[in-house]
Amino acid sequence: MIKTDILIIGAGPTGLFTVFEAGLLKLKCHLIDALAQPGGQCSEIYPKKPIYDIPAFPEILAGDLVDNLMKQIQPFQPGFTLGERAQSIQTKDDGTFIVTTNKGTKHHAPIVAIAGGLGSFEPRKPPISNIASFEDKGVEYIIRDPELYRDKDVVIAGGGDSALDWSIFLTAVASSVTLVHRRNEFRGALDSVEKVQELKNQGKIQLITPGEVVGIVGEKKLTGVSIKQVDGVYEKACDHFIPLFGLAPKLGPIADWGLEIEKNAIKVDNTLDYQTNIPGIYAIGDVNTYPGKLKLILCGFHEATLMCQSAYKRIFPDKKHVMKYTTVGGVEGFDGSKKQAPKAVVKAIK
Amino acid sequence: MEGKDVLIHITDRDGVSHQVNAPTDMNLNLMEVIRLYELDPEGTLGLCGGMAMCASCQCYINSDHKLPQISDDESAMLGEAFHVLDSSRLSCQIPIDTSLVGLKVTMAPQE
Image (cartoon, rainbow over all chains, first blue to last red; front, side, top):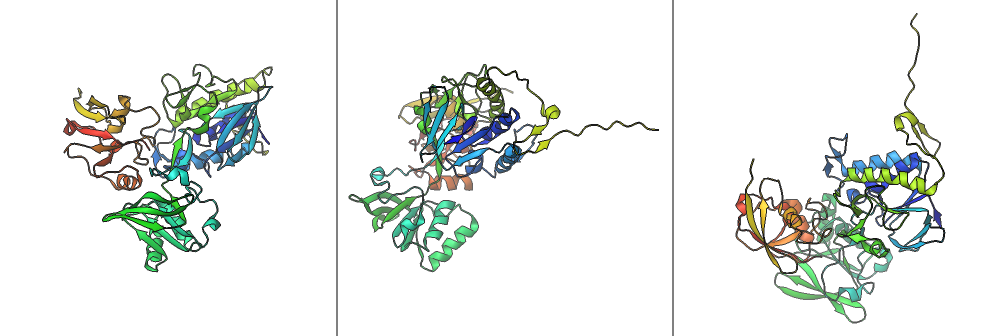
């Protein structure tokens, strides 16, 4: 069981900055995120896009913003459960919470801060009518163990980096690899595109473009796919079909936690501390809604800051606390580091 | 500066058609107009914010208007979107201007 003071669900910019504000109050944080890396949308969707409305940064790439935040929170030694989705929540008799992920990892904290953005990133599933009945019976949206494909015939669909990279990788494992994409052009990294071209020339990858997998063939298990091409629909025998169309956010299991939901977002008290209808559970950043809400990173930072003050009072109801400026109090990390403004030197001139 | 509105016909995901006045002086794109008129539940349209990096705002163009050319980003995204037709565009990539008077679009099914 992982124990912490504030359990943050979502490691996007708002979740990461929460660690800093909590750290100033000597509160420890642990973050859960469905993605394998921190940064949320900034890392997953637009790391190379410049953002222009972060105060004091006339321009910063989303990926750099995440790197800076990670550096800023490093002294507060946050814990991470990455690649797992927060699945269920249980309230204990003492009002604390246990959050369990889809992989069964349990976390215990007196405060839960949901900073889940638009939700957890899930694979985009192509609209093939019978695909759901073949999931894990030959259809996989994520490659967890490449060994599963050893000496098998594999069909991959998609035109981005993951489709290209896995096609390349699986040529060394699978018996055959077929890559299907609706366009002749691929939008992946240039060297991946060139590598696929090379493997195609060597006959190690069969490329079907323009083509689209439109059906699954099989009874209890997948035995093939139907591929639509310019001149008709063909069946292709295979053992596995791996659609790799990237990820899209879904609010997911959080929607069933008993929280008040409005407009696909969690309703919070914006007059005070961004607490939800369940005391001790807060929602900050893009995941929340209140009158006048704006889904901006800078608003998430503000919400995280106020939320931490409220969390402190909830954890230590009897302690007196005064907000301290970092210019005055400095930053004392949990790792023993200390940053402080240099003291002025007073010296007489003789 | 007083802006001019253009009348646009939008068929929503339930097949209901709407005639909306889209302002031309607010630097809006079509995805934002759909949002402005709440023709789609919040949190389901324009998930990437309008960067042509998701396909949640895909629509079909049903009139002969001359639209801005499809950029590489939009083209790549449409290459991986679902329910794509020849008339598909990402509505976030269509800026609202006076040339769009009478534009007819249908929102693509939600993924």
